[in-house]
Image (cartoon, rainbow, N blue to C red; front, side, top):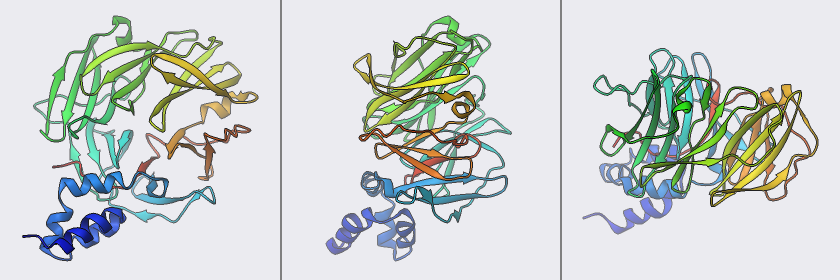
Length: 346
């Protein structure tokens, strides 16, 4: 029988500790190792980690990888800790609860990876062809009503769509029905990675031409059904692009439009209608706009500058007085993620 005092320490104290402390605590004794390795502990620890103090910056170099804490007061990030980086070259496409869905650029394999614990899982198996094409495919990481972490992989091959779902619990892939407009199969359409908000994964689908088609594809993660909704009603003036964000579990979209200078509006989805939240005052030069990359943490936006400096834009006070020059800090260079002990394996 498990000592109640041990359970109190584990579930009331260590569920509030950092992932590093939890990892060290597993070596105390076999009893602690068993309790700290349960899915119940990981779930409670994750729920108590959903705050800005547990947000981390992952910085991926050519041969090394480091994790940095974020200092909100100084709008910067602290000294990094080098972590095990068992890959040569990766692209990061989705993140949820400390797990990153990445692609190995040399082999096109999809993996789930927790940079804090170092654990990873190769999802691309020879018996199920789920290899990722950067210019064609889209992925989204989500958790369903049964608390099963899953990956949705949308593939475009030879004029044919396919949608596959990976289950961490079952450690297997399966194909699900996916019917959408035939024109979205063309390579002239770009699919974003999925943004999870509530029980739905959202993807922007944008035609790469000026005045092209722009829509949002919605995937109900429990019913496993797709539907299409429109973009916000912004007049298309040259370049027209939307970036999805989950703000306090409400879906928002930055909509940029223009040619040499860009105007940017923030819209919120209510039902299937877009409501304008506010507009960025002034215009943004095209060079600045092309370098923007947005990240969400605790209801606020984080921007990474070319010098590696972090800036925060608070949504509630709406101080959209200026924009900075963030680098592309997703995909090749790194990502912002939550520090947890969630494992890619069961």
